[in-house]
Length: 545
Ligand code: C2E
Ligand code: CA
Ligand code: CA
Image (cartoon, rainbow, N blue to C red; front, side, top):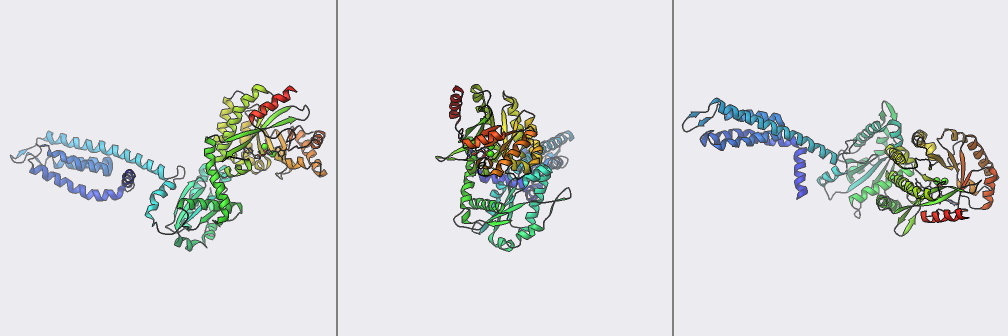
């Protein structure tokens, strides 16, 4: 009932025009009716004249302050020079009598109309906020939920997810405002190639969902891809490459419409992975559906602290001392422990990766305080994802929290893989240079796997290079790898960078790395990643010996 009432109110606000025409005729009729009532009840000496407030108020409601003032004037005159004080005795009204009343009517019309104007404005704004996306103004899921009951429920519906894959590159290239314009243009293009009755709405900053009838879908299924290919989007007259994928879910009696939108998302994800434009949802995608479900659980896991960190020590090869630890995230999930490769790539598909990084960052700051108390020479490192580079808010928050903390970033290292850095060089410099201003050190992770030429090392804003474990592990078997590692170490040292070798599992390799001149090592030979408590115990034991 409550929602029906709200629906009616929304409808009045949204369809003011229609209501105006209906009530206008009714209202015009009311003036002569009130006039006659006052006339036949004996004139303005009796209080029946107050009925005139009804059409005045109604005009103010329908037409705002202008309507209110006009109605006040009309009502005031009708009950003014054209009406007697006492109709049976034939006594005329004194001028001041009706003139004051007229002013009063006008004032009421004006004030009421003004208030209602503002109220309507506010309501409209709220309604828009609820049913339209905040930055693009495009209708959203709430709008869809409200209007879909209009659609025949028995009809077979097809759902689609249309995802812009390169929106992060576009936002960093064009800026947010220009991206929004491109996204709006894409929306219009999408609507123009889809049947008129298809409902297209925005789900997030790079994704639309589409609901259309199976019949409509049949008409466009073969031409959709071609028609979209023909669309060119521009920003400031520069043609842009918008990389998108479309996932489609066909009608199925087993699934609700909402589940089918999710299926479309999964199919779109597949399209992106396989560099295809359009993919139909298929039962083989069930695995991804499970992953998507997991992705849905991740925000809650963050809230409930179901994630935790393990730490792996970093050892100085010269002194054999522990100089750092690296935080590695894990997820306690349904009595199993999930490792990063089982959920980080998923989180990277959405903005959740920013929340995850922030969670790790905060936990690291927190744990560092305890670490500092027992081992003040040990630094701490965390991993971040390339997707984080595009979130300025995240960077600002991190900087603020570093400023607020006691150690001012001096002992903090941030790792990102070489390939991620190379793929986003502009954003990488921007992001890391800001952190470096706060004394944070940057580590290029998995170095050697990014296939960039060694000379690129000079251009990256890094302090340390971490040679990938594929190199370290095969150092003994493959002599050419040893040369390569030597070359990396030399070059890094020439550029005043430190070198870490990760994945050190045996003593021979350790000796080899020492001979090559590597600075630090990390690996199972010393320790596997372990809980904070285990790490502290381990550190104390080493300090004792
Ligand atoms: P990574 O940064 O290269 O981390 C090192 C990985 O190698 C860890 O796997 C670690 O357990 C493993 N490892 C360490 N020493 C040895 C060794 O001697 N031998 C072998 N075989 N493996 C060793 P893990 O914890 O599964 O992490 C995998 C990747 O997940 C990490 O690779 C990192 O890229 C990512 N990751 C971990 N934590 C986070 C995080 O908090 N945020 C982000 N964005 N990524 C994370
Ligand atoms: Ca790492
Ligand atoms: Ca690594």
